[in-house]
Amino acid sequence: MIRVMITDDHAIVRQGLKQILSETGDISVTGEAENGFQAVRIVRQHAFDVMLLDISLPDRNGIEVLKQIRKEKPELAVLMLSMHNENEFAIRALKAGAAGYLNKQSAPAQLVTAIRQVASGQKYITPALAMELANAITTGTDQPLHASLSDREYQTLCLIAAGRGLTEISEEMCLSPKTVSVYRSRLLEKLKLTNNSELIRYALMHHLVD
Image 1 (cartoon, rainbow, N blue to C red):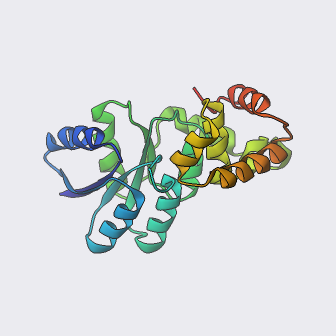
Image 2: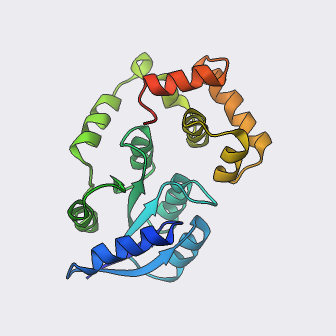
């Protein structure tokens, strides 16, 4: 039996995932958490084979949670879930140690396949993500400027490009508006841009947002 833990801040999403997995004979949901702090605490106390981890949590960025879990429980396969398209977020998650990356809108059968695959010690990526990864295997000046951004800076870029205001971004990232402004200044400098309009244009040009 594959023991699965679900970490997602939306109860309806957790319930939906449990319903899908309850119809299998070899997968059992034995734990759940609604934020990163709970996830780390529960993982320390109980054994799981696979964790489904939302990349957008109310208290911490999912990739930060992933990195901590990889340090403490390297044997636990973490399958990242996200509403974001398979783009730079997926690549960053895999580089941070995720066993796979799946869009929340994927078919139930794809979720079950992904869980079974990562539980067996393999990686799970879709053909679309495989293409993204192939395109990312470049060196030097071939890399896009946003590849140099930290995870927080990249998240700030995507939220600005999605039309979020400073207050909304600070709440979603659980940071002060001042800290978010610092990340914005850094990413503007790294991308050689001057304002939010240019940031949005850059994100759209590189398909970083829908």
